[in-house]
Image (cartoon, rainbow, N blue to C red):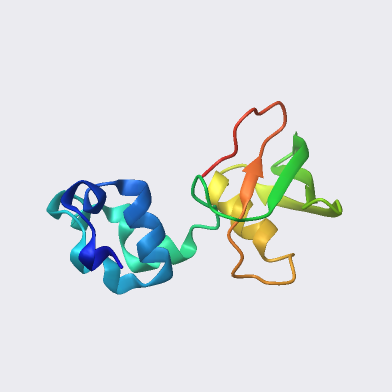
Length: 125
């Protein structure tokens, strides 16, 4: 409940992001500068498939990412079981597009997850 949090917590972008993901009304209680952040609007937060640091979320590891003609081709492993996911995206695709494409292939399409890119040491969030 962001409403009862201390002022420094209400100004913590990661904490507010997670609070808004859980309940869009939490933005009402965020610090003034965060209320104007376009990435914290309810629709932007809902579209973001990536988990924030510290969340209890599955990991998806992209093990192949290549440009093929006018497309970007990827292959990834979902979770510890290693279910293989794959797809093609336009060259103009963003990491968010990649995340949403992956999320559409998993059992719960509302799942937020950590995305590990090839040769990456930390997840995308």
